[in-house]
Figure: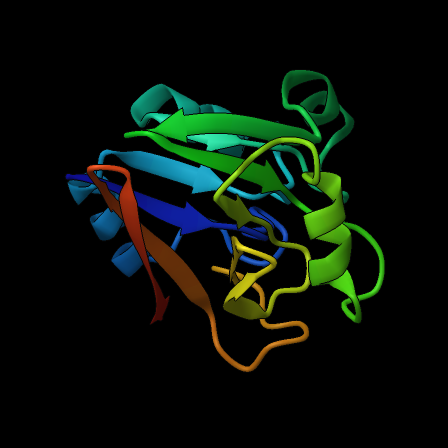
Length: 163
């Protein structure tokens, strides 16, 4: 079984100086990280990349250098599960439908996104959409959260964890 910690909208160092200890402890026990954008600083991204396996995209608030390093949209596979990764743009209303359209030709079973700072965990049109919320920022949300993805034999489970 593979286990990945899903984070987004960390906004480091603007909203926090570092990841919460609970999140870092979970990452250290996992196979890697999936980050749905808005790291803010290239230094924070480089720290994660140096120390952990990471799948990532840039977000709308990231430093310009991250737009050069990271793609806007990414499709990858873990243990036979095709995953789409995208930060998101625009207003929170209708975000899920816009994210789903972004991957309409990519044959993915799971789409991970961020941007709204609000958790989302639901299947739409035979694709599971998952937003872990924000790990460090409480704008648009009352609680900080992250996600856990477990994959085994082409089957996956997702969980939202409150910090």
